[in-house]
Image (cartoon, rainbow, N blue to C red; front, top):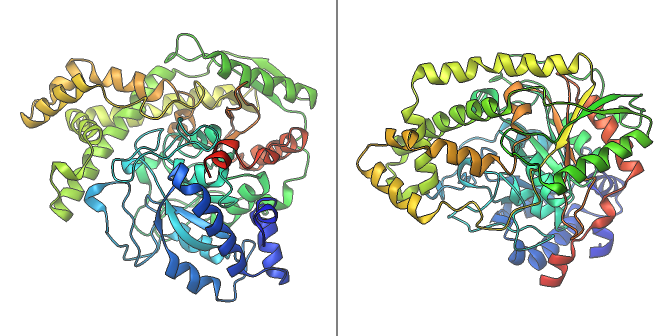
Length: 498
């Protein structure tokens, strides 16, 4: 299969070709590798190659909706037994998984051929992908800009045409942010729908879940069909879709009432391109017959951001402590920003953490009140166009202060001098809209409906009620037909670099 033909197909179409015997899994693997060798030096998306595993699997008879389709795992909590998962952390480089994650096994059961892993920030802790371990991953549409994070490696690989769909995960926007940065579809399912075993039960206090980034809505739907359902480690059994999501994809969503907003307490003035992205989507929705109106944000997003980071920082503190115990790693095994987050996490009390966790009830109630009168909430996915590589580097003076406080174990000062507020502003101000769905456990999807005059993707986000994945996907399919986006590939920036 030549490159042009390979790039024209989504994952389901490639799987159908393999099932019909028109191409082999080995043919598709060769096409993916050829494309990767052309573009990965420019984007730095793939951090680990699994050649022996891929060759062995491609030689086997495969079945499932994605039979023989090349696939990349995210290098974060997506374990393939016997192979390395670093979580983007120097202290874990070379660590090999003892067991295969439930979601990875379900992808294998769907027929994929895993040939590598994609880069992620250390522990998935940022909305960019610039780990010290592997270096920055770059946006295929502008190599000076980020593809977002923490699933930035997967998004860059799909956007660059290496493969049509890749593994991702989302603890605060980490599927939707990179999808928005690179012109892809990114769905975060509701809490508990996708399992996290056997290593975890409810990662990040239930904020995080697994999914994919893809070029087409139907690949996203079919991948969710493959993943849903509890495993032995699940804390509860959520209500499952009554029929495959893919089967209902072309059913009209009906006339929906959609409220949109670009207002955000973390940004006094929304970026003009974020406003234009939402206005463009609102006009398209109105043309399709939906009732669309501007609304005020239904929740206290500044408090939600603080609660989100409290949970995240405490999680980082616990994660680093665990890894230190298990590996004996010292400070040089972790990035400075991660150690700052962990120190901030240790400065919170158990009461602080419990209060942040219990305030989820307030955020859920606020969003439920909105959904009592509206089917969906529409926001920008990004607060501004994809930022430049290095934009979120910790300033040198803060690095020096932080190193001193960490050495002298006076990290409580970090909170008193306003480091938390600075981290909130720096790390969430450019992506302030996505954490709502994680904190409330509701599903949300980012769709590539808008591009800046310079050609940069700017996704828009729809947040739905509990268990509304079906509605989100049917609306996404309606929009995909009305305003196709897949024809934008491959990106010119990568083609020129290659």
